[in-house]
Length: 234
Image (cartoon, rainbow, N blue to C red; front, side, top):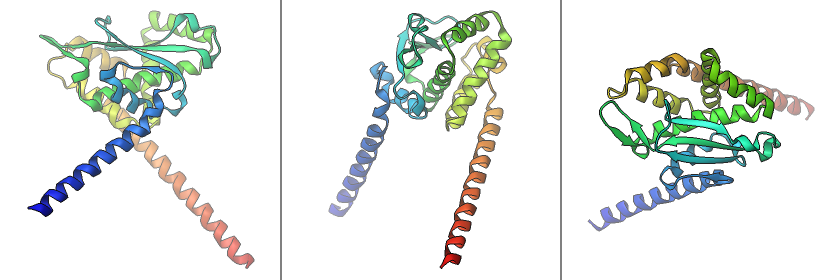
């Protein structure tokens, strides 16, 4: 019995140590970020896939009502004319996830789904970071007047997230939305129309994994050739 208790204590300490290491690893991404306490862990996890945004000023804001959306990534208008390093962004997050007959607090959504949702919005911000102030203003105009441009922008955000290793999270978010029985059909149709489907995302992930494997094989072959050449010298 005593040995069993010692074993359980050992496993508990291991788990605490692993959690502490994970927390320490992602807390670095809190720099220049304002995050609601209830969303902090999931937001930091999503940010950890975007080292390019490590020092970017981003404010995550809970709002009681966002028209036709659950989240929105936007540049702060007054900072548009500043240099990119001094530009500020905000991600508006609906306080409640609205269903047909009820609503649920946004922080009660499964973690994997929440991380994917935030990761998609961070894809928008990474896209914004590559644009000048005038280009962002034009982007905003096109986003409002052109459904085709909206689809293009949303697909770019998904693709950027997938390229940074967030494929499983983005898929989890899409499936959560499309398979949720209590979500309005109009919202599901909008997601299906404007965003990459889970199948396309999985195909992207597969291609990225194949590309990474090929790069590793080429690197291994180069290293082997180098070693052979060095051996011949001796």
